[in-house]
Length: 366
Image 1: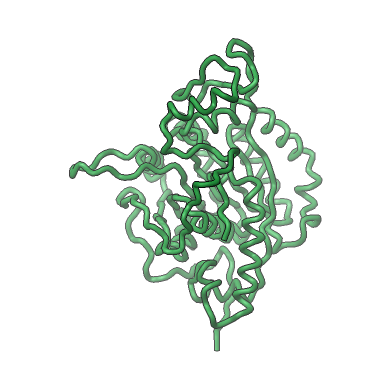
Image 2: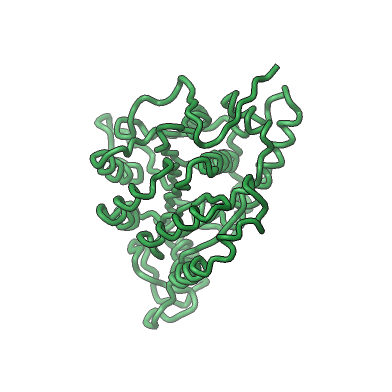
């Protein structure tokens, strides 16, 4: 007989195999997931971004066919280009983003930060679902779990993906994090002469009550400038919300120091009610103004839904420390299989229209 406990993001339960080494002392070689699906490169979506391994010259030749610009700057990510204006004319920031995504591999790099300052809002559940989506679509990524009190990414995905513990508990640790972030993207050669793989996609799960720390990172340490200019990465901030007004207050505060320099994905956790019950978010005039301001700069501001997973199935995965994929592979409870299958399909359906914001080039068929 299975023993069930109530599970949420505030649980303190961790497995005995948690990584003891801090972020600064870990190796960053990816662990190839056993259940990763081979990429089908025969029918690449023409709207998908160009992979990192295509030489810049080939990328430029491909894009010259579809652009009127005299030249495309491949190495300067801060310059603006458009696909339908002359090079000596003023350009649109929005068009610049779309053009650079196809001509500059550096623009494909993503730092996806999953946050939600209220404890128990569903932040860890979303991070786990996104990690599973990466694995199922053979997307190489590094997961950084900064939620040391309840490290879900480590507990559930350490064995099937490259997940590392991240300690950002004090100012010195923040400096180490910023320095090591660049090392992930541009790894130095080892003394043996072997090189570590560079990483173009980083999934960071933040702890609860992270907003003050993030403010320090951005306002005192120039974090966004470091990520944009030194790591050549774009930032997507995922904010998981419930129906309470505190979530909107924290979102407004987040915008006050992040501004329109990042992409925003607001995740409505349907565990707390249907979409029409998110009245504070849906009716906020301030949110509507922010959305217009962010989109005017070429960044994105969008909302998606996270489906509700039935309590019995969620608790079963939590008690057994099973990934969503393992929930499909278990034979003990057919109801868990059905519930997880439906949840995961719905989750991926929400991700698919905005896959580029999450660093996914192509959703593979299963």
